[in-house]
Amino acid sequence: MKDNHIIDILDNTPLANISASELRTIHAHIEACADCRRAFEAAQVSSLLLKERANEAAQNSLNANPFFQTRVLAAWREQQASAGVWSFRRLWSATGAIVASMAATTAALAVLTFVAPATNTTNQQTAAIVPYSDESVVLDQDQNNQITNDQVISAI
Picture (spheres, helix red, strand yellow):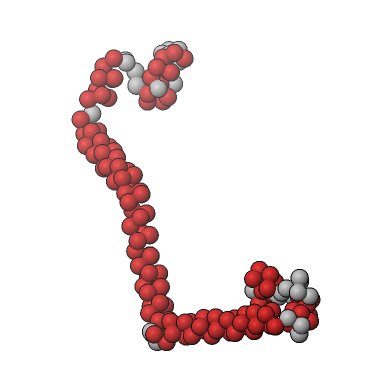
């Protein structure tokens, strides 16, 4: 068994991941080989020390600040509360220019609609060019005064 040492198994595989067949091989070998027995015992001790140290470090990090969970949750709630304000700001920054241009266009159209018709010059100029109006075309059914389809279309 001197040629088949378990030190290779201990070096390549963590102690927690050793399979049952490898563990039987190890126990059979350490009965005959004192060096491998010491190596196996050292591996067990180091594994225990590492687990204890990891548990101690985890406990110290939690015990170092007893209000850690409270502070984390408070910060998370604050972030969630401020996310609503920031989402509106992002939305406004993305669409603010479009909304402003739509408002300016609406104002310009309102001015043109309510101020420009007061000058009624275009209707007077059209009436001077065309000897008949759209009312006379539609309402005047005089048989003597027949107008052509071209005159109707141009009046409309």
